[in-house]
Image (cartoon, rainbow over all chains, first blue to last red; front, side, top):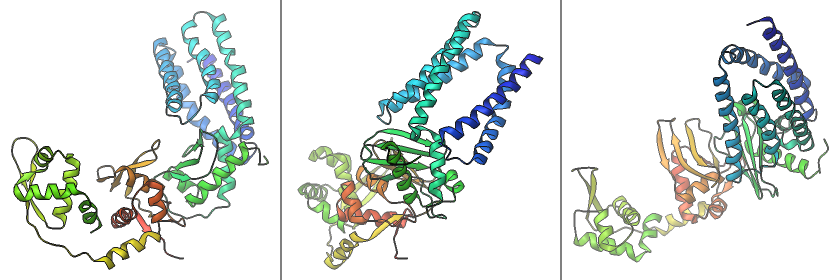
Length: 233
Length: 183
C-alpha cells in the first residue's frame, strides 16, 4: 500500500465520520442527543476502517472480485426492495432514490479504463443522494435516526422492567398508509388498519425492558401524528 | 369433553364409528377410502374416540412407515354440564403471553399467524398450530400488559369460544400464556 492509499483512507474516514454525525443529527430532527450521535458515528467508523483496509488490499489487485462483489450487493439490495413491494409491505416510492444512487456506482465497474465516464458516473448519484436526504428530512418517519430519537423520548414515558415477547405486537389503529420503518433491533410495519411492531430481545434489554404493548402503541401514535402533520418537531 | 361433543354433532362421526365396530383392526386410510371421508377428518374422530377410551389402537410395523390400526371398544361417558358451564364462564377471563425464555415461534407475518410454538430452543419440541389457533396466538397481548379476554380473542381469530378455552388451557400448560391477575 502506498502513501496515496493511506491518505485516501484517512480522508475518506474523516469525511464519512463528519457525514455520519451530520446525517444522524439532522435526519433525527435533533431528537438524538449529540453525545449519542458522536458515540454511534465513532463506533461505525471503527468498524468501517478494517473493512476498508481489507477491500483496498484485496480488491485493488483483482478487478473481477470487485465487480462480482458490487454486483452481488446491488442485486441483493434491489431484490429486497422488490420482495417488500411484491409482498405489499411497502411502496417503491422511497426506494427509487436509492436505486438511482446505486446504478451509476455499479456502472462504474464497467468503465474503469475511461476516467471521464467514471467521473461523470461518480457525480450522478450526488444530486440523487441529496434529494434522498431531503426526502428523509421531509418525511422523517422513514428515517431510522428519527425513529431512534422518538424511541428515546417514548422510553422515558413507558413502564420498564417488563417481560419480552418474541412474537410481533399488533396495534389496532387506523393508519391509512402501508410502509416499513424502524431501526436496528426494531421493525415497524404499517398496514392500513393496524401496525405490527417487532423488537429483538437484545434491543428490548438495551432499552431497559419496556412494556411492549405500551411501547408499540406510543411509537405508532407518534409516527401517525408526524405524517398527519399533527405533531411538532 | 368439548372435543367429543363437537365431533358427535356430525353424522359422519357415527358413520366412522359404525364402520369401526363392524371392521375391527382397521387403519384411518382404509376407513377414509371406504366411506369417502377426508382422512384428516377420520384421524380427528379416531383421536377423540381413543382419548375417551371408546377405541384402542395398535401400531402395525411393516414395510415403510408404521401405521396405526383401531378396534372399537364401546362404552359411555357422562356429560357434566356444570363442568362445561364452568369452562364456558372462563371466556371472560383476561389472558396474556407469559414471559418464557424457552419459548420461540415460527410465524407468517403476512398472514399474521403463528405457525409453530417451539419449546426448548431450535431442537426442542415443536407444536404445530392450525390457522385459527395461530391467529389467536398472534393477537395475544405481550407479557405485563393488561391482557385481553378469551372471548374477544376468539372472535377476532374466528375460533369458537369453547375451542378457544381448550386452546388456552393447553397453552397455559406449556407455559405460553397466563391468566391476568388483578394487581
